[in-house]
Image 1 (cartoon, rainbow, N blue to C red):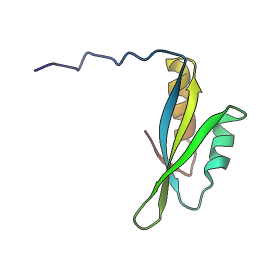
Image 2: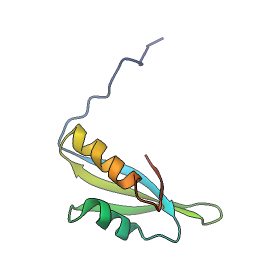
Image 3: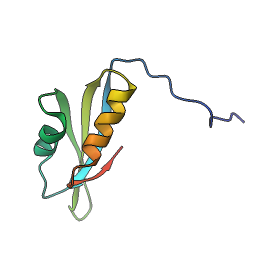
Length: 87
């Protein structure tokens, strides 16, 4: 069996990085992205609604320059009040 605990994924930067963003259904994803990304370009695709339509998920693809940029964007999106989960 291969032990992957000490392995880190090799990502070649710069690259387009997809984030799965799940928000409360009453919130507006474009408002959230404007607050977190400013004028930065992104691609947006609606993914799914929860069974009770309480949450909506989106795939947000952003051009990231390096690992620090990728992680910083993750944290910026995640700290918005309407955002439940960022993957």
